[in-house]
Image (tube, rainbow, N blue to C red; front, side, top):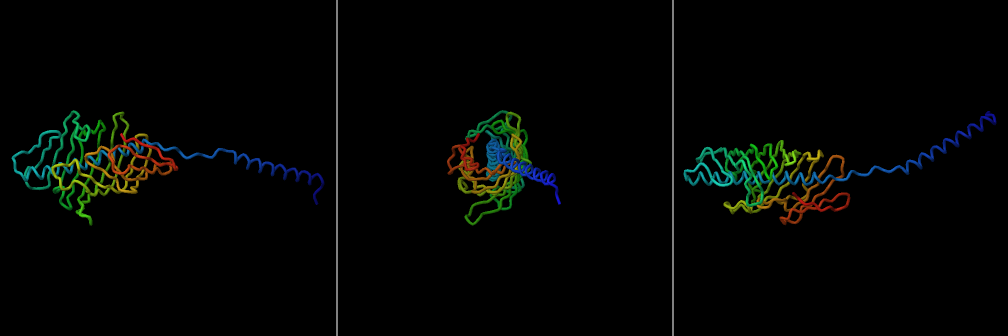
Length: 286
């Protein structure tokens, strides 16, 4: 049996314990909850730069392969196509594979699409660009687009025509790296399917070529953010437009809720919208 003193002490302990419990709960309720990290939109713009550059490499390589096929078939005795760029074809005959050098020179040369390029794209093509099963491997020597240095390897495989009679290519970018003019850099790896939807009949005019692109990307932005990308609706990319024209992607940045990016309805305007936590942010592509 407890004495009165023991009972009093026991009652005080209960009161103190209850007081501490309710006080702790009240304090926990008042502690500010951690807020989601705000998006670093540099990952979006950096990805757009890499996307545009490697899509352009795809187009430049396709044009070089088509030029090589046409020039050797014409048997005009030339091994070099002059202008900007200079294209060298080896061997200069009807046999394949071929090594094609696309040399923009050591100073910037502005193309019809408004981009400045310099340096060399090396194209190793097993067969002509339009031949199903052909494999084209691309590498670079001191190659720059708008003063962004491009490194890595892109392997392009022609998968033949799909049910819509469009050529479909697999484009595999390995160890892609874009060093920006401020010496920060983007790393970029992708495995994509590119459907040739516009411009195939006009062989001599590559600037109307357009592709619908699906697949996945992983990379690290110039700000150091690791990210992955899932394609929601195909990206609309045209050789003659320096920006992505349309399509929707989800960007998953480490430690940040998913950001959805909508590139628009197919207009070549450099505008996009980023949707984050239900809020839409306008983005201007570089």
